[in-house]
Image: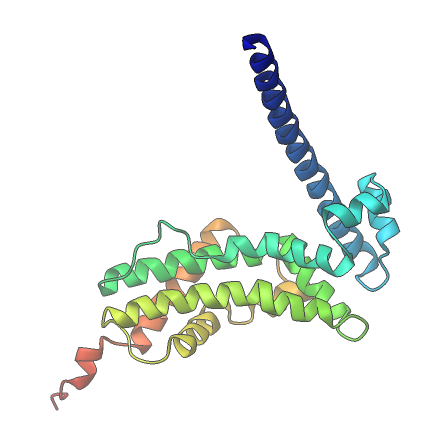
Length: 231
């Protein structure tokens, strides 16, 4: 009886270990498929890339490809979502309760945004969406709804926090759009055209700091706007 119970417990432990091992292997293969899909999209374009080409690049069967990731559009969504995660507000970012903290938060988040979006892999996704606008408009829709919306929502979150603390007036969406305009200027277009190099860390920090300063200058503390100006 005791021996039988021990055998059953050993089988359960072995089964759990096998499941963990299989999960790890599936995650590794899934990552390989997504890397292969991204490389194929960049080389041949989304519309002209076949699932067979992706499977061949990833060294998997088409059956395994569909089981672990899905169809071609699901692969595209997964590729973009993976890169969009880096555009969220970091958990350790402080909630702004004064103008100095707000300036720090805007400069920090702005630097992160420029650093991540100017990454060659991300710029390549934007170029892919532009190139496929006619033949595969779903690329642009996915990029806008997942990729760009992540940064918009994160920035709106910062602005809403500043607004609730009485540091800013206006709609969070409008404030976020204005800060983005100050942050980017013509840089994103120049990067897409390939006429400028990706900014180095020092340039990224300076651009974000200048954008935060310009934004706060345009939006003085709400209490200050209510005070009559001395002539």
